[in-house]
Image (tube, rainbow, N blue to C red):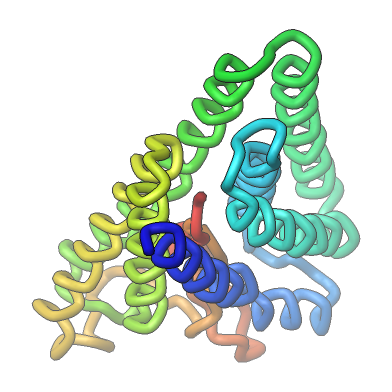
Amino acid sequence: MEDVAKFLFGISGNVIALFLFLSPVPTFWRIIRNKSTEEFSGVPYNMTLLNCLLSAWYGLPFVSPNNVLVSTINGVGAVIETVYVVIFLVFASNRKARLRTLGLASAVAAVFTVVALVSMLALHGPARKLLAGLAMTVFSICMYASPLSIMRMVIKTKSVEYMPFLLSLAVFLCGTSWFIYGLLGHDLFVTIPNGCGSVLGAAQLILYAIYRNNKGNAAGAGKLQGDDVEMSVDGRNSKVADGDDRGATGSTKAGKMVSQV
């Protein structure tokens, strides 16, 4: 019965995480349409890509047995994030932005390659799982911590204009699903980061309940253009933009909200 419950929570986590991975699509449609990344930042997508690669590696049977559902969603996530990074490279607004994105992508590839090669060639059994799990946990917690900036903005402005309810709910449900999955599988490397994600998701929902009636009255927050979500996951890590053609006025994060498992 415990295995069945673990499987069901893993499937739930996969479905919700897929929604989170795909949530920036309107942002990238805007980038392609305008043939420019404008003021959007490629950093969150590179960081999410690294987290997905490390998590997918951790879930492989020869690294961490019985965690294939961790590999499936993060493998898909890695493909999606790679597409996002490539779009950033193609439509970078200037040479400096392109070089910065390329440098980050190279660093992501280097870190993942080192972790994979060391864990595969130099370590075996529990030691291999330990290295891969620690790497995954560190970057997962970093991804889940990124919504703190938007939460600070909500408290400061007393407005949830830039913190979409459905996204916050998805982050909470995704983190909770993977947290329970980790508990049932007695896997601290899955439990700890997703427990953090669940708590942060719950905190966002509490803030939403407190300030929901003030939506649209953010004073001095800087006018953002809408509702696209640039993800975290984690997050996943998410940017709010509206997709109207007046242009983004910055890269305010609504939190890296990709499921990080």
